Image (cartoon, rainbow, N blue to C red; front, side, top):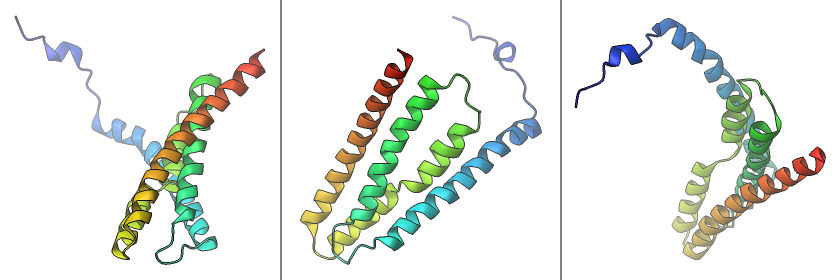
Length: 152
């Protein structure tokens, strides 16, 4: 057995053009992330969680964000013929990635544990995970059904 000639397989890409090609992607992710994180922060200000209480705001932010992810990905992958190349990085990774916050979910769980609420922490961990997964699935399924009806 011989080792294949890797030189014939690789296509040299100049570093500058590769970086330049990624700059718009990184930029739209950053802008989208700022928008999503600002929306999440605004929700947390409007509906604050009392110390030791169930973090309903972040729970619903994550559930709603996951539902939007389900709708968005079905629309982009199954309904749009040629979406703009920056749409998924901007909205999917940036806006929705900044809006949903599983890091705050972990911090909120730790805070509940620190305040002597292990049952609430466990309920929050499980409920968020199950509700987020269900939201993605239900939203994607509903979106597919709507798209199928529109095609008839």
